[in-house]
Length: 109
Ligand code: AMP
Ligand code: ZN
Image (cartoon, rainbow, N blue to C red; front, side, top):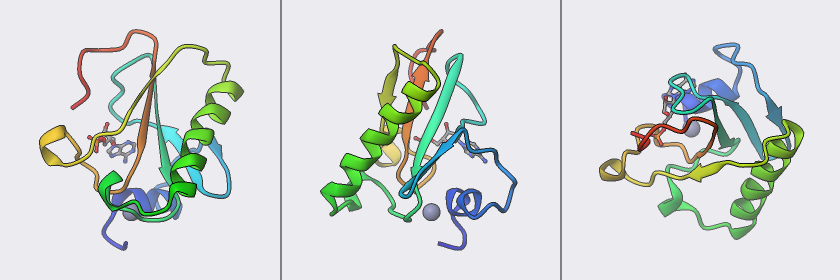
């Protein structure tokens, strides 16, 4: 989607560094970290939120991406969060999984 910030990041518009990427997703650092390590796993395909997902394969691969990047970075203990909907704190309406590790602050958005 042309006005979606995460689509722009995936497109390379801001030169955001990807700490990991594969066929279906990119992973980059959250700009406003809520833990010592705060990453976002973002599918290349624009999907607004978990509510709009109709592909179980995509969800499986996104969770495998969490495993791949944490393994690569040797992160053994972490929390994953998916905010779904405005009232739950979703601010960017392009599905993403937060990965938080170390010094996790209370609550995320
Ligand atoms: P959520 O509230 O679950 O939608 O999370 C959106 C997250 O995206 C927030 O934690 C923001 O800090 C993060 N964010 C917004 N813009 C950027 C950006 N340009 N680069 C990296 N992270 C961003
Ligand atoms: Zn998008």
